[in-house]
Image 1 (cartoon, one colour):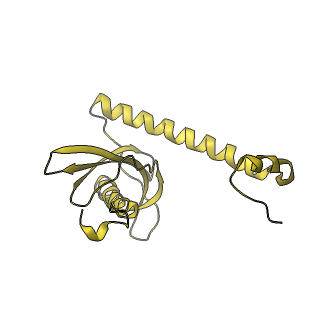
Image 2 (cartoon, rainbow, N blue to C red; image 1 turned 180 degrees about the vertical axis):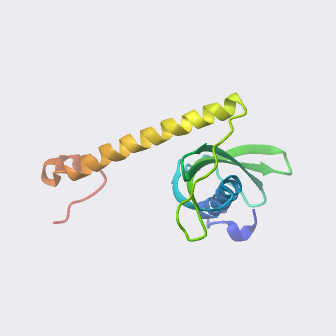
Length: 165
C-alpha cells in the first residue's frame, strides 16, 4: 500500500480496499461464469483492523455459491508487514455478482463443483446468508411502512439529537 492510498490518519482508505475487493470479486466471478459480471450487492463490509502504508495486501477470493445467473464471491483481505512478518486479517466481505451476456442481459452460470467439506460449508452458509438477508429486508421494510413518527418520538430522548421544530 502506497502513501497516495492513505487518509489523513495515515491508514489506507476503506474505499481503496473496497475497490480492490470489487476487482477481485469481478475476476473470480467472471472466470467461473465465463462472462462479464457486475456487482449487485456487498455484504459484511467491516474493517476489522487498519491497513498501514507499506503493508503488502493479499486478497483471497472464492466462489462460494451460484444461483441461475448470480454468484456469491467471498473475499478475505490479509495485510502483512513484510519487515516483521506480522500478518493480520483486515476484512471479509461477500460480493453478489450477476453474469451478463453480450447484450447486457443476465445469463446462466455454470454450477459449482463442491470438492471439499469447506466448499460445502461455504455453499450452505451462502444459502443461510441469503435467507437471513431476505427475512431481515422484509421485516425492515414492514417496520418502515408502519412507522408512526409521532408515536416513536420517545425513542429520540435516548439519542444524541435535538428536535428543533
